[in-house]
Length: 117
Image (cartoon, rainbow, N blue to C red):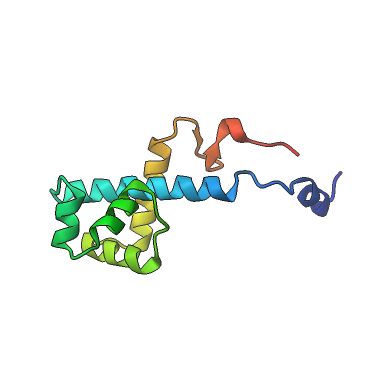
């Protein structure tokens, strides 16, 4: 039987690359932000950004998953939508599951990307 340290040594490669995780997260967050904006009745990012005094291009990048979202910007958006961080993250998880038919609920990843040691 392999020791726990042996398994760690054999598992040096990350399951998913850091870049993949980041891009996946930014895309899911952006989709949730778009959905929240539309729920408030705004059809365009420009009108929403103007109404809430957000930099238009920055807000567009957040919606499109083209920027790293700062905690300050996220806090401002959560305040606008009256959401807690936990409620928002649950929406992101739901979005991630809905956007990926191969999502493995038990392990939180695509079933076809599982690696075995």
